[in-house]
Length: 601
Image (cartoon, rainbow, N blue to C red; front, side, top):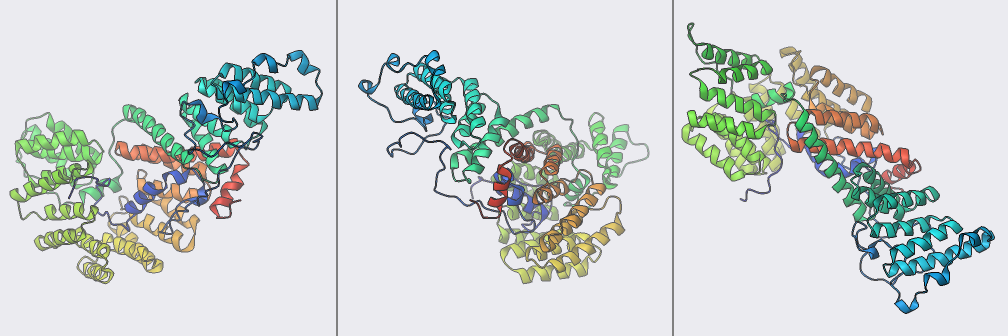
């Protein structure tokens, strides 16, 4: 199998399609542009899907189109292209030089204009516009500008300003384009061609957010029927997000992700054993011992600091120190630093666990072959390590290779049946393969063998929720929540709370209770990005774009990797743009609402 393309990989141990992570990442991949359209067009949490805007072949013209129609020729080019002919919606095809009049023949003085009647001014304006069109068609832009200016003096019309803006576009005078298209829109706020022309000028001037607002307004006005404006929105969101991400990455302090995230990763390996240290051990060895104790106690910040300190000391556990430093860098999203530490660890003393962890980075970087090679190296070192087969199964699951994943999960269970996540993932893989009955049987057996495991109930609930058996799913989530509270009330895994929120919203559309559950999750784990993203979606569903924007900005703060950061910023900017469109073009709000209901004009 080719190494590309590989989907973006989460290091969470349960990448089931029905899981929160999969639902949110799937929603993110498919709906980035939709966020900007309207709150009511977004994902209905729980699998109803995203509203797909219907496309129409009809192209909407400007509000004022007094010129003769062009002959049908090639498809209209992008307004960003420099060729003047691409920006002349109101301007006829080229005329031969013999058809053109001298500027002096049509000259109308300022004094003459002042003495005209309204009707005379109207006729003169049309004559001047026609002469301007002729000059434009021959690329005589300065002359054309003179005529359009005179036409505006006679009778200001949106089309005259827009035509003059076309001349300035050809001359790459973006400030003049913006000035004239704005004047046109002040006269006719629904003039789509002027909006798109101004959007192009804003983009050329690097005023990207203003450009994004205008392209979005144009999309709405045209009922999302033209691909160019939609593609421009996507392009601008990406560019804005990449620029902001670069700035944020350069300035933000390194920090570990949420406890929910860290615990999920740490729990995907068997229990950590603390190395034996003698009473008279060196300072370095004592620091390593402390780091492992912190790790076992789930004090991850303290453990990371202790391992960093131990790296600078003489110790008998240099390979473990490097491996765990790599682990912390990896879960923090610093893959290059993580790779350096893993390679140092493998140089000192190769271990199967370090190869397994490095394989996760290889896959995240899109290199499947390298990941599989690391798993093979791990098996060469210790073929009886059950973690190898479990994590290789995870890779195969992510790649959709469910038969192979089932085989590796089964091997992991054969070597150590006490590890509950292997049983859970086996059930989920069976479900993904299409064996719902077998998957549920595996879950039931696992509940019997691990009755106190909240994870079993949580992920069993996800399967039921995926089948839209919401009452049964909520029952399982409630059991998972109770078990989490009884075992670790302060550091409990909050995913069952969020899953319950999604099930309640999907089945009852009760956004109040759903939001309350997600906010409760954030009280317990303020850095839980799953809760933040779910709240953002719920806010959008209720038309609360302002709060959605705040949650997306928070999601950006929590992002581990550059790709996650760009994704989160894109949504924040999309929500911000929706708010800006509402302020700038309030008349479009009702149109958005109508389109989201499928009853557009």
